[in-house]
Length: 266
Image: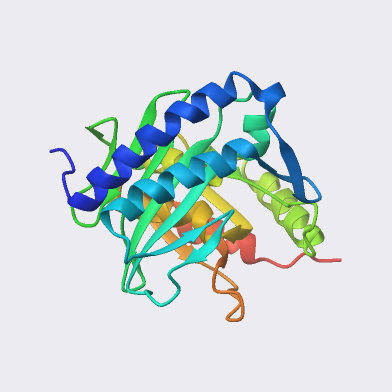
């Protein structure tokens, strides 16, 4: 079965169009304009150009929809019923260094729930997509999470912290604690692809603090439709677009959550 809703078709077309200039930029990284948003956090002219193409394509079809983007912010704030959630390049630091581990990520939210999403790595030509009730796919082939049952046999992935993080000690202590119990933990630098890789069984679980909603919106629906489990922990009601996420094949979920939730003993 191919996904064929108007929203998923629109997102797919927008991602394909935006990817053409992104691939050109990836081949000419030295010519890009780069500015710092914070310590270790950069935005490039490629981010802005890709985002502009996505916005233009989505607005052609639905000018009334709200949009939440990484670089531009919130567009059409009055429409909170229907929103596009956009990250033009998830994994900008990888992109800047010529590492082909980055993706365009677009989710469609309706009444506060993600209904469909696309994560596209244009270098690898891998398009992950899903819509509620109709499954998750990688390049039109159905995907499922792994069936790994023992957490010490699992391959996990995480990310962070950014240079501006105020909870670096918490993040590092969590990483050490999990690594002591799970021999294989990776850090790839793209939250969207991390979630997509859990969805297709390449990884068994993923956790990360201080993410933005646009980092993971598409990944949420893709992973859920692939049979995985996603939950947010220790949320801040004053920062609804900031997320701490745990996403797994569902089998190891409680055990990994227990490791993350443990307190270090002095």
